[in-house]
Length: 319
Image (cartoon, rainbow, N blue to C red; front, side):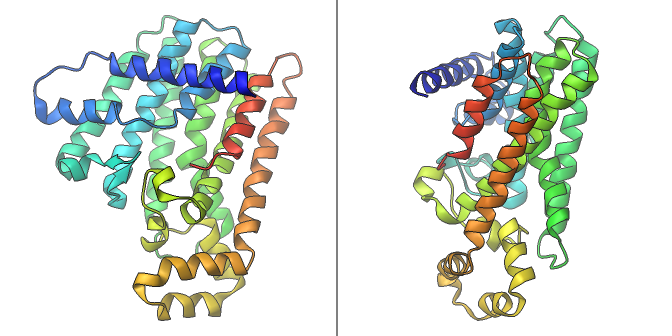
């Protein structure tokens, strides 16, 4: 695993270098300073790593993989910039979000600029360009649909587990699905092979998002690089909130209505722990990680060892 971690670190380092080497003009500063700030703000880079490993398993040229990885990571950054505005989050990767460092108007424009740069970079690939671009844009629209559902769901007490799973499949799963499948789309893979890679990524994305919801409650804010509990305070319908509301409706309502606002996060965390909601959430997350591995087992003629190790790395993350 140590050698694998070294390889992942090298991919992340290469992605960071490529992001920093994007020729960003100096003017207008109103647009390009926040874009530069965003691209140098760090991140886990799981999506470009996934693209690299998927491509490596299929012997795709490393330069092509970097181009696809850059487009994927820029798309992810675009969604984060806009997501931070919509959720009014102040911290991302341990730094002020763009709308906090500048303002919302600047952040909206910067996000648009980042997405446009992703399109420009993606246009540099020489094979299957129109098909790859269409797939990329369909993914972008699905992410937006997921984000819209996430906002619609806020403070809605009728949201079910199925509705939540459908939402995170669009908001998170679709991009991890694309990160996994894009090299296969580029390589003229057949629809069955593309679907296996996409479904692997989507199930990995569901597990990733549920695990992320869990870390919002259990992790260290300094390690996470953002404030904890913000999703619940905004009325987000996370899987833990839904489980609490559906299984303990009276106790959950009483906790929300009667807890001191300054102590609410601690009360919610304790409630989740006492009712085994944290453990149940962890089990749901692990079931999606397991189903993602089941898709990889269908690729019996392809060496997927590195992708399997990535699943375990994501499953065990604490940030």
